[in-house]
Amino acid sequence: MNISFAAPSVPTSGALVVGVLEGKKLTPSAASLNKQTDGALERAIATGSFAGKKGEILEIIAPANLQNSRILLVGIGEPGKLSEKDLEDLGGSAAARLLAGGDEKAAFLVDKLRGGKSAQERAAHYAFGALLRSYRFDKYKTKEKPEKKPKLKEIKVLVEDAATAKRLFQKLEKIAEGVFFTRNLVTEPANVLFPKSLVAEAKKLTKLGVKVTVLGEKEMKKLGMGALLGVAQGSAQEPQLLIMEWQGAAGAKDAKGKGGAPVAFVGKGVTFDTGGISLKPAAGMEDMKWDMGGAGAVVGVMHALAGRKAKVNAVGICGLVENMPSGTAQRPGDVVTSMSGQTIEVLNTDAEGRLVLCDALWYTQENYKPKLIVDLATLTGAIIIALGNEQAGLFSNDDKLSEQLTAAGKKVGEPLWRLPLGPEYDKAIDCDVADMKNISGGRGAGSITAAQFLQRFIKEGTPWAHLDIAGVAWSTKDKPTVPKGGTGYGVRLLDAFVAEHYEK
Image 1 (spheres, rainbow, N blue to C red):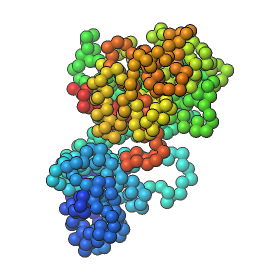
Image 2 (image 1 turned 30 degrees about the horizontal axis):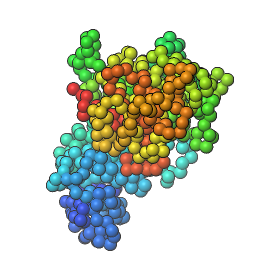
Image 3 (image 1 turned 90 degrees about the horizontal axis):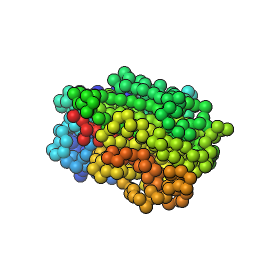
Image 4 (image 1 turned 135 degrees about the vertical axis):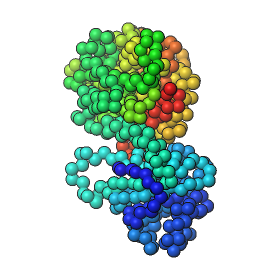
């Protein structure tokens, strides 16, 4: 999708998008179009229930006296109450309607309004929402009929001081590129995306200045990563530990004279999860291609930070494995030794994500001594039972970090809900034959006991948060800025979190 900005000058072809305030009050651009069409806008509004409330859309086909194909009236409610997310949702909703039509070009007419954000800010966020909604994964559609494909190729945003709007949008555009990178990774089938091919995709970030390092099976074995390697041992695909470093805080130094301690993001990257010997049911197993959603989000946020040249030092680390049943696969009852030296009895091989993460978390702390760690994982089905597909679960040992992440999620529309941790839950993973077991063995508090497991691998004094994104990494329905499929959840959240609290 090509998005550009220009001074107000209404084009004579394509679709037009204009705002209407709550109470059916026309914005200046809408009022001008209403005059040119001999009152067509007011008549259309009068005949239906459209009242200009936030998110309402009314379409006028072949407006009188104009060569334009259609006019979309978009309800913007009260300008003073519109958040950035609201603006993006409005832009995304308008784009969705345009993508369903037959136009190749469209223009958004953005007016200066009393109250709320400037016209340039609104223009940038409208465009950002439209761009996010334009995403489409169709590389494997070889026989799709032309009429099924969206024709919209260009959106021009018309606003005074277009240069300022364009400058604001350029930063958002880099974030969108990170989101799209994640969506692509999550959507790829597992015969295309496996540990080594995911690494190959991540190496594209080197063009943005990200340092990418990879550890293979031999290196991980030397480090004692028995938990991660145990998950991978049933697959023909070699496991990988993907390490991405972005040094954007120029001049920052740590105690050793090197770049200041980074913020760290750790992702679960199970590129396909059959459950291993504890085999999953066949129905729906195809969805397990996106069990690497946490790793995908970590790659995407590193892309976004580097793309917009964020003034922060950040490291992204992903444990990449495939969990398969075979003659070499890990068995229920096996005991593995993690990199930390702690031993784990594997009671269920389908509780594998925590085994991957525990070694990745320990490696991160040992090698980077980060300011904080946020891990992301499609970890438990239990979080979907608790929160559905609307919010991700948040677990943390630090109240301030929890509050910052929650606020960032609310700002960008990637909400989090904090759940408890505590010694009473931790006891549930105590084990008779090893230091711990990988499941509690009971039906209750499955997401909490999984988080308790991870917390045993967090060193004292390290602020840590675990985001269980199992319910939000994939969407079965369209949303204003998220077409159904891989959502890219976590990229915008973590980018906003870094921008607000950790950029110098």
